[in-house]
Amino acid sequence: MEDRDEWSFTRCLPALTELLRDDEFVKELRKMKKDQEALERRLWARMEKIKAEQMAKRAADNQIAKITRKPVPAEKVAQWERELQAALSDLFVRQVLPSFDGLEARQAARLTELGVPGLGGGKRGEDAKARQVRVRRIMGVLEGALD
Image (cartoon, rainbow, N blue to C red):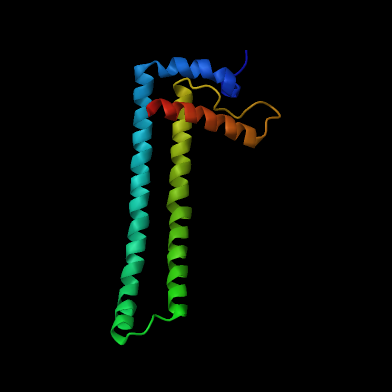
């Protein structure tokens, strides 16, 4: 018997249609989407906090430039941009990427528990890109059902 995790997208469609008729399944999808949106909001707020902190650091120099009617030196502006980019890069590496990787793993495991086919490692010989396209198409069907 063939493993459902390795089904092609075309073969998954009837099973997905059947799952989407189940109100409990759709309810679980909505919960997963809500959890993802909450994570996105938290991470967005952290990013905005970093930006606000960077702007606060610039306030004194901007005020001096305004009073003296001289522009802030280009080197200083470039330094601010480097600091902001470094802080945002650190946020992405330390929090955003691990958070989304964890969420993706939890959601994939939950979808597999719920019986969604086609999310597995793929058939022997199938490259990672083909698997990624298949999974993306399956997720598109599931997300589309929530709209």
